[in-house]
Length: 169
Image (tube, rainbow, N blue to C red):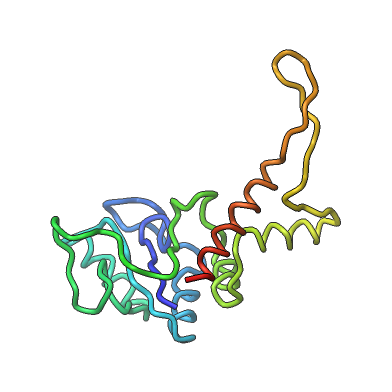
């Protein structure tokens, strides 16, 4: 699997343009994913010396990337090129819902889990069942009761839709 990984706020704390402290277990997890055969691409807004510093920071800790801000090794980004890289997955702190801890990220990648899978596991562990048909009563602004589909149910549906679209590729 090819995975794009952001730097600031993901591998290190967000202190741009400085390099923040390493996020706990980030480098170790990424090294393990690379050892498992995944191709890691550093995908960051950094460029020039700031990018070189980020690459060096990771290299000094034993983490080297398949490519940097490019789909392939040795590729380079310029203003006229598409900035988004073609990958199977993005790991980024700006992800909807934020970034999970690195142990969870590793589990999601290796077991091919979606957020919907994690929510279902969490609900099972809590002894309650969450599914897309969950409804609860809610009063609207006029005080009338109405059935309202839960946010969790909508999230699970969207994750399942995305997963089925991805698996059809």
